[in-house]
Structure formats: structure tokens, C-alpha cells
Amino acid sequence: MERLVPKAIRVLEEHLDSGRPDAWRSACKIIEHSWGRPPDPLNEIAAPVDVDPLRLSELSTPELVALARREREKANGSLAEPGSSELKSREAVEESES
Image 1 (cartoon, helix red, strand yellow):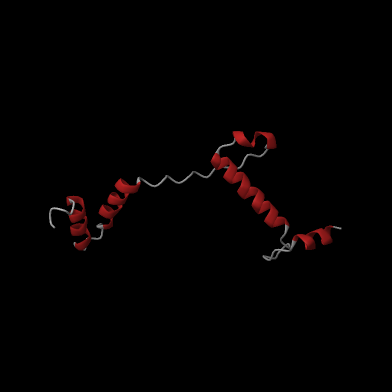
Image 2: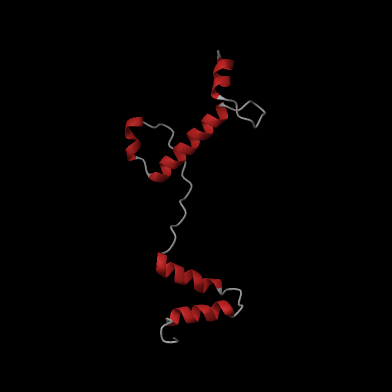
């Protein structure tokens, strides 16, 4: 049975059983070898100011995410009462505007 267990698994088990505070790093390395490294986080990118709807396909993914976030915040902000954290329904906004 000893020959069937790969050396990397035995070494990992020894590291985890050692009680050392950095033993988790060995497990992370094994996972990285198996699944690959996690993607690096995207840098925060400002949403483009003037966007031609016909040119959305030319924007990068981070730019599209920033644009969608800004538009969502703008839409949620327009539904909020000034000084209130509660959102109003679209019908209530339309009634107050007319």
C-alpha cells in the first residue's frame, strides 16, 4: 500500500501534520498544480464617459464591468429618496415626476 501513495501526497500529509503555521502553503501548491493558479484580480478601471452604444463590442471586459456598475448605481440612486436608504418602486418615481 505504501508504494501506491504518491510521494507528494505523503509529503503533504507530513507538512499538514507537523503543526507548522505555514503548512497550508503545501496544500495550496498541490491545488495549483492540479487546477492551475487562480486568476489575478482585475485592476479597478474607470468607466468610459462617452460611450457609443454601437461600439460596446470594442470595450474591454473591465471597462464593461465598470460601465455596468456605474449605470446600476445611477439607476439605484435615482430610485432612492434623498436622505433615505430605501428604494422606491419605479411606479412611485414615475408618479412623483408627473
